[in-house]
Length: 219
Ligand SMILES: Nc1ncnc2c1ncn2[C@@H]1O[C@H](COP(=O)(O)OP(=O)(O)OP(=O)(O)O)[C@@H](O)[C@H]1O
Image (tube, rainbow, N blue to C red; front, side):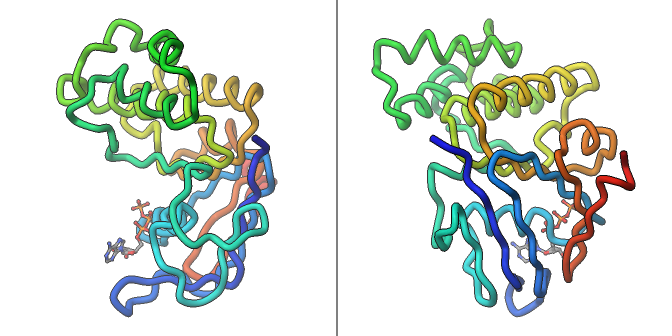
């Protein structure tokens, strides 16, 4: 599956009549890592949720691969700070679910899930339930599950925020390695300029009314 471009055109969004974004234009080109930085509360998570198809668009348009976004899709995965693992499934079976949805035959799922968990440093923790894992471990399971699903676009909302520096560096490297094999478009929100510089093909700063390119500034 090829990477999916993402487009926001003159997008305005808000909650209960309170505007958050107004008239935002933004494009993530197919296969690039677009990093979004911006002040707390400026609407970064809101924009990602909109790309994920979780917020109704009232003004403007959102497109994925040129087609209007009308709701969630397996093509567009969202990873946010609070993990969304199924609490009654252990780590391995959470990853297996993504493989099942991708159509991987049952006989191969267990081994493949364990190999993903090993890549995020949790090869020994496959039998643990989410509540038996630390916050950072749950984030890594979530990353494994998302990458295993091979989405065409990945929306990442400070996915490595709760990790220690070394684990964070390992996960950044893993993300780049996986994308080299299975290209996807990534929209990555972070407050960490070092992370932005490392991961971003482009870095933009979001404000309520638009985006400014930053790559030159941070290079
Ligand atoms: N579900 C919601 N209902 C009402 N208001 C919300 C909701 N979610 C976010 N907001 C408001 O929308 C604005 C943008 O929030 P958002 O989470 O998108 O910002 P952000 O840029 O991701 O911030 P941060 O960097 O702190 O995570 C904030 O003023 C926030 O209070």
